[in-house]
Amino acid sequence: MRTIFSYSRYLIWIAVISLMLATFAVFIYGLISTAVIIFESFSHGNFGAEGARHLSVELIEMIDLFLLGTILFITAVGLQELFVDPGLKDAIPEWMSVSSLDELKFNLLAVVVVMLAIIFLGVAAGFELNPRVNILDYGLGIAVVVAAIGLTVFLFARVHGMRYEHKETIEDMEEQTPHTAE
Image: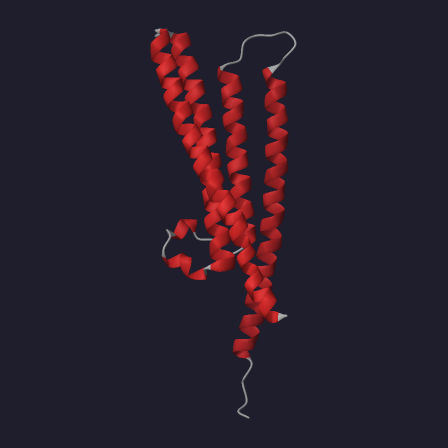
């Protein structure tokens, strides 16, 4: 049974390969979309404030897409490192290395918060006065989501910190306990 569990960790490759394919697709889509946005901006010849605002909003929204691709890539590398190849840590930058699934979750939550901020910025920059839609309502909705995510991160960090402190306490106690020779 132990052998089965030992080899079952390679099932993670399904997730890693899928995430890498998704990363590739998102980056290629972003490249093509960015080229189209730039081409359309210059071909319409609207070089005033409205054209600049439109180009700015479109390119800021592209950042959102590239952030998504980046988190897909980091998650793929992190899963590979955690489950299949712990030695991968030596081949990647230290900031990209993960030591737990919690770290991958925190990375995802951080990118979600940034993506929500970018979405709000895009709406705010392109906002036109409409009596039925209030930009503050939209911003309040995003603020509630960000606050919920912040609370979740805070609670996860506290629980994780408590686990870490408990582990350190046990290790300290073991170091202080004299070992008898048998």
